Image (cartoon, rainbow, N blue to C red; front, side):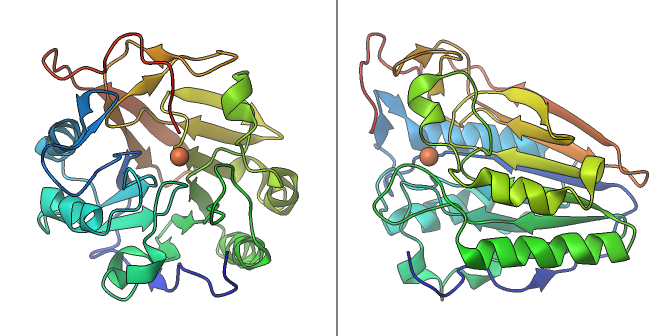
Length: 277
Ligand SMILES: [Fe+2]
C-alpha cells in the first residue's frame, strides 16, 4: 500500500440527470487474451456478454467497475476491459485484490476518479485494496475522502452512493467474511452523519446480497464470471449465472436496483472446482 491516493478528481456527468442511472459490473477476472479462463469459464466471453447486455437497453449515465478487473494483475486486462465498452459510456474503476492498475494509472486516469458529483446524489469510489493481501482495508486517505464526501453531501442536502471492492459486512460465509473490510466500523461511524441516505455497493464476493447495517443499505453484485455459493464455510461454487446490477438514483434519495443475469450454457465453470485464490 502506498500513501498516495489512486483515485483522484471529480466527474460531472453531461446534462446532470435528474435520475442518475448506473450499472455495476464486477470481478471480470480478465487475463488480457481471449482464451483466458477462471475455473474453466472463459472470462472474456462472459464479461463481454454481460457488458453488452447492460448497455443494450437503456444507456446508463456511468458504469462502475468494482474491482478484480484482472485475474492476476495482467497489464493487458485493462485495455481488454476498455475494448468491451468501446467509448460507449463513461466507466469508473476500482482495484480489487487481484489487480495491479497502480503501475499504469497514468494511462487510465479518466477511469480512476474519486467521485461523481450529481444533482441529488454523489457517487464515491473508495479503494479497499491492500498490496499483497486478499482482504480489504480503508487507508487513512480513503477515510479522509469519505469524511469529505459525507460532509459535502450533507451540506448539499444530497444522498451518497459508495462503491467498494471488498464488502463492509460479513455475509455468513466464513472464508469470504475473513476478507471483508477489516476497519469497516470506522467508515460506518463517518457515514452516520448521513444515516439512511447512504448506500454501499461492493463486489469481491461473487454473489448478490442486500442488507441494512446501522441504517446503511449494503449491496453486493454477481461477478461477470464464476459465482460463489452463499453461506458457505469454505470455497464453493454456485450454479447461478453471471450478471450485473442496474441502479437508478432517484431525486428523493430512494434507489431502484435489480440484478440481471445472463445465460450462456456453453460457458460454465468446471463442476467440482475446489479452490480459488
Ligand atoms: Fe476480489
